[in-house]
Image (cartoon, rainbow, N blue to C red; front, side, top):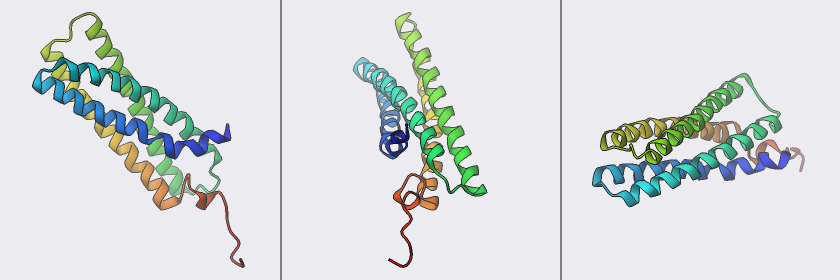
Amino acid sequence: MEFLAGLHPKVVHFPVALFITYIVLEATGVIFKKEFFLKAAHLILLLGVIGAFFAVLTGNQAFSNYEQWTDASKALFLEHQNFANLSVWYFTALLVARTYFVLKKKFSLRLKYIILIASLFGGYLVYQTAEHGGELVYKYGVGTELNIKQVPDDQ
């Protein structure tokens, strides 16, 4: 499963983009009262959750393959992991709740605003996940070739 570790940097951008797109579509649908945007938001949320589960799977594998952990980088990773897990489970719960209300035809305007506000908090979780993940990459080289191949100084 080592190949999954290399996929993490490529995969993580999809759920981030999908969740942000979901929030924009949700807001557009609620504010302008357009059902098309609300249905599109629902589909994008589903795709984002699926992508996020795959991002967490590949991220856990990337953690296992990185061998140069320091106390600081490991602490940062744990924060990144916590925000990632919170994001996945938060948006999964949001998807389940939203799907329930839509299927039971109880997705009233009030609930739409509640879901919208909840999605904005989810956006904060995604931002924190991405911020910590970016710091792992740019500060410590996690998931880059810098930590995979060490070229001897005499070459």
